[in-house]
Each structure stands twice: as structure tokens, then as C-alpha cells.
Amino acid sequence: MAAQEALDELVQLLDLEAIEVNIFRGTSPDEHRQRVFGGQVAAQALMAAARTVDVGDVHSLHAYFLRPGDPDIPILYEVDRIRDGRSFTTRRVVAIQHGRAIFNLSASFHVTEEGLEHAFEMPDVPDPESLPDFATLMAPHANQVGDWFLRPRPIDLRYVDQFPLTRDTPLPPFANVWVRANGALPDDPILHACILTYLSDMTLLDTTLLPHGVAGFGGANLMAASLDHAMWFHRPFRADEWLLYAQDTPSTSGARGLARGSIYTHDGRLAVSVVQEGLIRMLDS
Image (cartoon, rainbow, N blue to C red):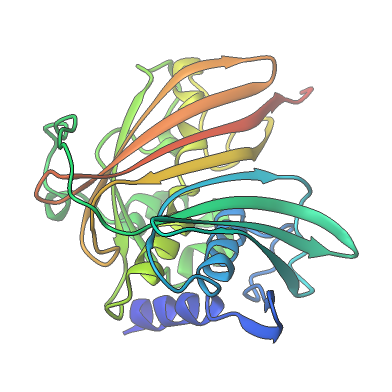
């Protein structure tokens, strides 16, 4: 029940307030964060764009994180209706706090069509129900993370590979994580797309640390932050059903890391592709 309540709070977070034509207001959860979680801003911006679209489903988004978000004040989302076509609709969204842009997103919506079909096959990995949940993995580190460990979570994560906090040696540049909303969601495709956008920012950048033997989740002496984020939505999915997030990192250089993700439905259909670059800046000891 606690997990469903946490998910319901996330859904409420995405239910933006319309304060004027093409202008929406979003808030942040009371979690005492130093900055707004990037996945939240991306998901809210996508929701703002979708609120102005009458026909079509989101098929891609491209976004830049410009400044850290302030979790103590609302975020304004200004939508620019760039194009309304017969097949494609395009929107640009700017997120604003303290009079300055903190994030911008372009999203494209497409009326469903039939066409050629192919996709990479899903990696062969253990079933999510056979893997320990996040609370089980985090239990040995409860003292390290404090009250955060006890908080109900809207997203269920099951790591196929080594848990980030236990890494201490270089690993191959690949990671697989099962993900899903931790409860039931309404039958609203854009809500499922926004929830997936939210969770797509949770584990991807950490993949860039794998070849370097650096622990994730703040366990290393580094500064990490998302810089840009892109997603392509290929096939229908439900965010409250298990999805495999297959990730890899082709390059890290110049204090930036690049990571890619392929998100598969439980029955093996490639649903979404993701690419993200982030700041990976090692700090002085």
C-alpha cells in the first residue's frame, strides 16, 4: 500500500496546474533534496507539451538540463506550439525558476501509422521476480543513507548486474536493470510515457562509471549531473509492467560520460531507446 501511495504521489506530481494558455506550474516533492531530480523536470515538461496536443502520441524528445532546479519553489513550464501537422506535431517547452531557464525540451508527437518492422533482440537475463528488490540490496547500507532508505518508492528497481554501492573494480561497460512503476497506473499512454521518462534518468548515467571501478549513488568522490537526454518511443508499453533497461556506455572523456539505453517489454519487444550525456567530474580528495 505504501508503494502505491508513493506512486500516486508521483502521478499527482505530473498533474500540472494550467495557469494560463500554454503555461503550466509544477511542484516538487518534500524530500529535502539539494536540487530537483532531472527525471522529474523532464517528465513534467513532457506532460506540459502533451497537454497542448490534440492528436498523436509522443515518439521522441530531446532535452537539455541548463541549471539545477530549486526544489523549494514551483517550476513554470512555457510551451511553444511550434507546429501542428497532419502526421506530426512539435512542441518546445522551457522550464523556468527565479526568472531563468533551468531546462528546455523539444518533443514530437506522431499519428500512429503502419510500416516496416525490425528491432534488436532483448538480452537474455534473469526474470525480475527472481532478483532482490531495492530495499533488500540497500539493507546493508541503511546507516549510510539514513532516512532515505525507509522512504516508500514509486519505482521498483531490480539490478541484474552488480549493485552500484558494492562496486570496487572496473567492469564491462554494460548494465541491465528491470524497472516498473511500483503499483497500478491509469490507462493513459502519455502518463505511462511521462513515468518512463522520469525513471529513465535514475540509473543511466551511473553506467558511465562501470569501466572505472567507481561506485555509484554518491559513493565516489565525484560530481555527476545530467546534461542532455533524448528518448525515442517505438512501441506501446505499460510503465506499471516490468521493463528491462539494457544500458551501455560507449565513451567517457573530458569530464563527460555518454550512456545509451534500450527499454524492452517483459515479452521482449523494444519499446524505447534512450541516450544521455552527463557531467562526470572527479573531485580532489
